[in-house]
Length: 282
Image 1 (cartoon, rainbow, N blue to C red):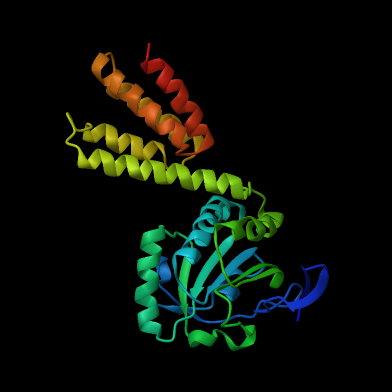
Image 2: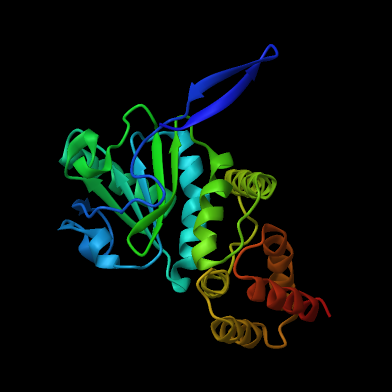
């Protein structure tokens, strides 16, 4: 049991930190989970054994609420970004009823746009017997490599602020930028502002709808999985679409003006959009 000091009224008290799951240096045991997304949806698989020695982030969800969702969003953003570097991520919901848990996690995966593996424990709310998970915590996040746990986070009241600690440990194995709490909060505020803009815009009749072909091109341009070559290809298609049409060039310039502050797409895409904006404004 881990012991942490607490300072209260000048006195040092001892309190027990949450203890859940295998600790650093211990093996990451194999276990079965019912998958709810991807190619294995509807099947029970042993995700841990399948990944072998690869670096892993395994997140056990003892409950699902907004606070847990706030933590999962930056975890998933990092997981998608570092998947190409070898990070394998699994979210496991500990549900009393496997069927109901499957339905719940299907909704969560859709709502949070989870691309990483999502499953439901076949062992109920206790989770895999070899893991010793604590039902009193909301989330147990494990970072592992070569079949051994390298970091353990048992969180009673999860939130976005816990993400940098977890991702900092994962980044030791796969690299990548770990956003600070301040950066995460700024990103959240940008998303809220954009959501409000969209709601406001939908409430007012638009003078003229955006051309569907341009909408399709812009959606392709801001994909976070794009390679530089794919970005250049879409930018070229946008140039072809505008051609010498002054009205279309103005529309594209205005779209770039809206998109750029929101930091959509890859860093390379953002640089190309800035160039495109300047071109269209000439």
